[in-house]
Length: 524
Image (cartoon, rainbow, N blue to C red; front, side, top):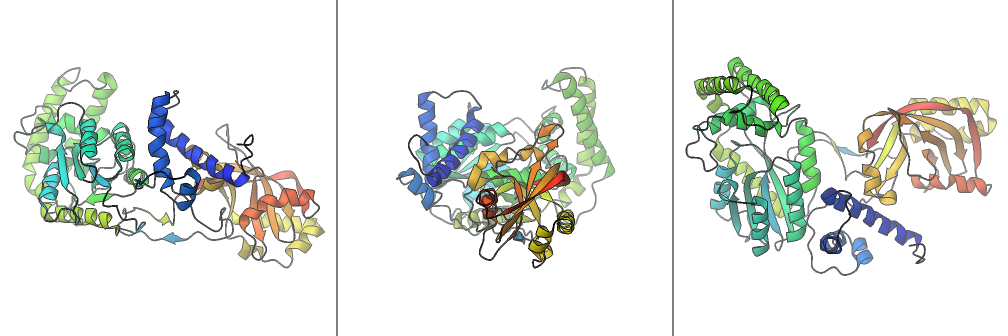
């Protein structure tokens, strides 16, 4: 770009786009080189999708056809204060559902409704109800369903083929979508067939797994009442309990919050299907115990045999005994397990209403915690304001220039929060921000080495340290903590202080030795 004399502003725009391309293509293909044909086939839909996200992107890329945006998978951030140092972040309280977008799904764009769940979550019964719902999802798009248990061969390839034949249709993907590989295929399908995807999940609590023991017990109970199931997972299956535990453990290691947040981030919306009544008596001890016993047996089995079926290996007798006890206990508690479920008709209505709202642009994903307005904009180390103020007071007492500068400024009110920006999406690209993901919530020492100030700006020169021996680096050419800006001056202009210093328009007071302040790395 320098050889072509590309302007600095255009370089920033292009670099941001290329960073997003890197994230997109490496997620799909890793680091292996692409063939020319693969590169072109992937680049075209990416550029089309990118161009439609904003007028600025459209101008950057040029005319990209009549492609309708699929997912806002890497949001273009709008905001006046790029660093956010001097303005308090605006939080919104959680609600269910809460409104985060008003984008209406275009009528010439298809929908893929899919189910990150496990057997027994009633997805097939739900799909039948949606197919038979009067008026579909409230518009004139036809609704189709593909039941995974009836499809021979590659199911998701079949869904993609049907999407191409009927690009404006709503496809109900009646198959569990439990893992990363499946969700990546769905993302790719959205790009290649111009569709949006909506995950539908059973509502549940969860700590080390998105689904609670209560929910798992109900799912197994439902499976054990099936007869002649096309997928051969019903009351006649000798290892039905083991299969259910296998699905359950595909989600292991993620809390409910993490599970929902990932789906929202990737697909932009989330539909929850009510499952259990909020006002219910605790799970009977016998039910909880038999489920937990099965989980422990599953871990023993997989640690020794991997994915070997439970009808083989060291623990065959234990599995046979457990499967029988499981049936006896769950069926013996049938009245309880039936009583704690919400009526199916209610669950269906709730799901259909949510799907219709998404199609109209009047619904957004429910959240389980406070969410900041907008998407992740930058990565930064949050520093404790009292320690910053204490440092400034010490400097003011030791150096008259600092004292004179600070005497007519209320730093307590100016510094609402203090942070050292590491990477900003607009300036450094999405990949640069995402690279700090492994350090989120970690404590990071920061060495503060100098105070720079002019008549309109003040900032501390700062250098981040290491976390468990790995250096945390800032993408800013001059890592700093903005302290104060004059009237009408943006916080990002603190980046110009070293240049102002070289021009004799700013002052520098060294802090020797540097003061170490420990902060926490966060996304904003």
